[in-house]
Length: 341
Image 1 (cartoon, helix red, strand yellow):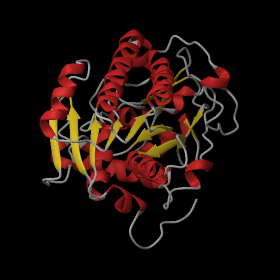
Image 2: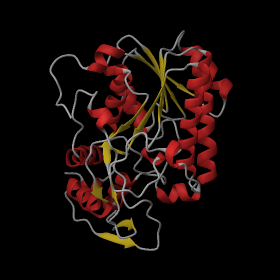
Image 3: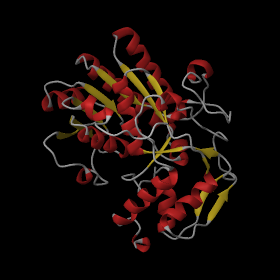
Image 4: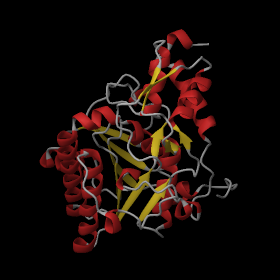
């Protein structure tokens, strides 16, 4: 993957002056898209359900940013919010989704599937009716259902390996992509499907019961508890920093060469080793307790990121660097007062 080149970035050249609607703009990943777009000179309309984690205070203070609270379940409310805040939208980045850790997904499959499909359908209709030029759906590597240890390319998805699983999050991402592709075919919409691997980084919801694996591990360590790992911890995953997901996705859209693309680093780690890496980033001892009776998912999931590598002009940060940045943010905001240094 090419190193960052000198001069103006692809994002700054391509997004300056454009008006971009970001759904879930005060969410974990959405806030990073908002930040990157503002840094690239775009005007951003940030739609959100609320700001219980205080992310708005971490965004740049600029007249280029407007925010609106709206429930994406309500298609009319969504349309009214968009029309009230901007005369036209050049692009949509749809990040809003109900997500969580493995236990949350297991217990809330129906709710997740219903919520995420409603969100996606309403956002697509809003964009279609306003003839939005570019629409990005932030999907997930969860669409790949395989135990193959080889990196998974974009074409090895549900179109070649459609599988049913009682997992509402997985199903919502698959059917959301199917719906997007049908809208692309029927209505001629310029739709992009970004599939990041496991996302981590600053601004995650460390106190949420539906927290992802990295913040959940950090929260356990902050409380002086053992990190709980489902299974034997040998299952491997790849992780990518949220800021790198935003930057890479926007560059892929600007390049307009691929409609579907994986976002990742090519680096993988076992969950057991991840637990120790998180403890090292926080500079504390880390104890791991294995829960062998809990489901673990696929034994391995690694993405083929060659499409991304051929387009972006930067190298995503390593897991070690990204975890250290996340740990610094975690401590600085008082999430781990006992660990602050």
